[in-house]
Length: 205
Image (cartoon, rainbow, N blue to C red; front, side, top):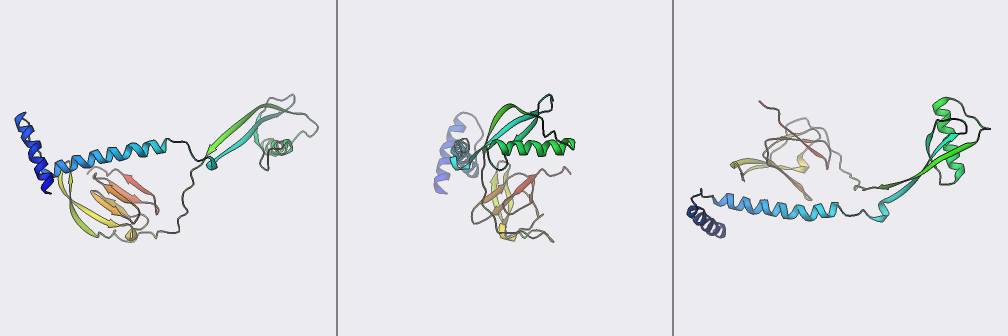
């Protein structure tokens, strides 16, 4: 705290020499947090833009097929493999489903071939099942937090105490053993799953 007070003194001396308003110690600390947040976001953004793991990439072959002397093209995949017979079976099933009949003695034409690349991100399977809320969420404690608007009372919640459908108004903090959610705005957070928290803008009074 003493270091921040000293730093705030130097900053205020400079601001006063320029005829500008001084800043408080909490506001100086908030500036450090804002810079830290920006510095943290940059490498995270870089990681998210990286190529996915090769094991998470799959390729799907797609044939655009039709009967000879017809112009109805169906997009078909080889559901059981990439052999031509699999694509033919897929085409016959799709044609039967679409039109109610097939033309067994008619030649099947392949108009074009496509390859679709699919990259997947697999999430961890979660064993925790949230019960539905039947009362207001429990507030662990209320602390003072400094915001751009000034010092505000901030409710602190434990993620283990939350239930499906809980509505948490900001400013608030949700603490878990693996993560932390800091809602600095006067919005409502809706708990819709163990790892899914949806912010909702509070309706104007």
